[in-house]
Length: 324
Image (cartoon, rainbow, N blue to C red):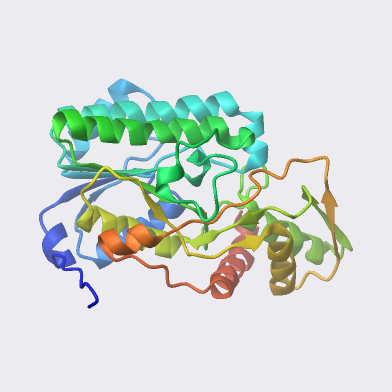
């Protein structure tokens, strides 16, 4: 007999909650804000980077005083693709650690009811068995090019579990896989693979160029997760999940970078040749998640078909590229 999950109505859950969304002005944050509002949240505080430096303890305390949250969703992060991680490993380690660890500590001290920490797929070991299961998180060192970032974010899991064990603090930790969607970062210096490919191929087609050069050999695989689905998963976990076990959030798919490049070439109309620069790193060999726990614990399953999500992302880029 199939077990039916029973949860509180979202409007009832959010009606009297003050919510703070760090990173709410960013890419994923924009989808999380839309989802929160759609589920009945009315009192949402978004600390922008211009107003609060969340790597500074005094600024964290000021932000918490200003927002007085019942619940924090911590999305803020310094993130980027392989190139950005290789160029700035110290920054990626320090800023992500110092945005997270003091914030969790101060949230506990100030009596915040619940903390939703957003981790990263980069926390998994380089050669974790595919699909990645949460109980393999500690079975090896992360892929070297993004290990400083992945380990800094992984410390939030250790802290989340320690604070629940010692203080009873209701902190949860989610591991979303590679995100994409409209409003993504299309800066070629810092973007992830999907927006980078969309921009490179669109610009090459606009200029009439007959080739693009991409990093690596195209053999690594990735799972891609539409940002609107990710936001829904995060908000459902905020409403329904109250344990320390880390939980994967993903779409349950896997595609090679080579096949991804072919698909984006087709959807952007790029008719030239794709060449691979094998002097550049591939990154982690394979990435795909086991997403059963998210379904079991809080009823989340991804909905966006990958081709449709890509087309929406390309359409957004084409409509907004002059302002990027």
